[in-house]
Image (cartoon, rainbow, N blue to C red; front, top):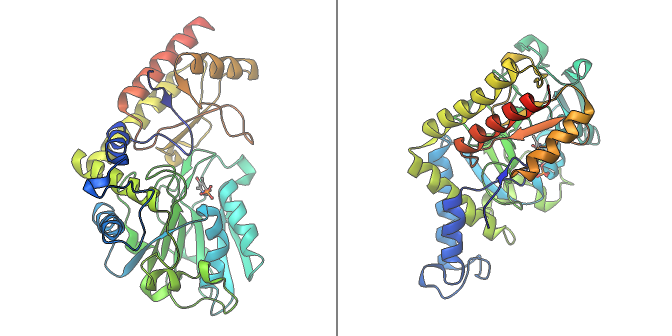
Length: 360
Ligand SMILES: *Cc1c(COP(=O)(O)O)cnc(C)c1O
């Protein structure tokens, strides 16, 4: 059976060579006589996998030495609670920027734990842009400031890293993790679900500046306490062994490509190709302010709801699947994460051109 071009927002495509490697390793991982799914996480053979993944992640993403990399479970959504529980230690105050649905959820969850202030929101224009913020916008007494760096549903991305002064900046990078280089030293914490760019579902990765560990509220559930996880090398309990293994394979694939700069260039070209077409199209358009466009999630609409539905249906029949926009916004969305080959975007654009001709 031929594989489809899968534009799902997550879980999403994995590189074909990674799938084949995982398949080849499946029955007997490197002569151990067992699959990675079956082995003890306390075994030597698994330690090499998890420590190897951590080391390679640090290298590929250029994570500074004073940051811990944690492999967690519960999805990005569990961190919506873990963040306030771990960080609201001093003033009990935090600043949130709301640029979409996941930022809204994080903002609402944090309100259970402290005095949470809305710094800015782009809801007034259906989250189609990123607000411009300066240091003066942030409360210098806040324990942290929070943003969602790439907004998966609305197809926007911060074109800059907000200057929050001395207030640690926390960012949800679920849908842009390891898609291009990021200056992690500008953040206190970055985190995300790995099922978009990095691994299968089940793994959440959090990168935390060491001085921010050990500030958790006393009532913090032990599993949500970053310090516990850091002290136990992400193995306080059973980690998501299989996802961490595939994460390592994905990182090896990035290394083989030539590293993150090379991958980022491919990603930017894929996005530019799609946006260029949308900007020249008479049928399709993209609603996002140009400078704030995501290179991972490209949203678009045709002229009518009927045409949107027709497009999604015909695209799926031609092997371009999961192009339907998020249920809250409608229209279409092409998620073109790391594993989407350039050819997939080229062919999608070709298909869109033909659809436009046939329907105008
Ligand atoms: C997918 C996503 C989430 C939710 O992730 P889960 O792992 O399903 O909890 C949160 N934030 C962003 C930006 C996402 O793209």
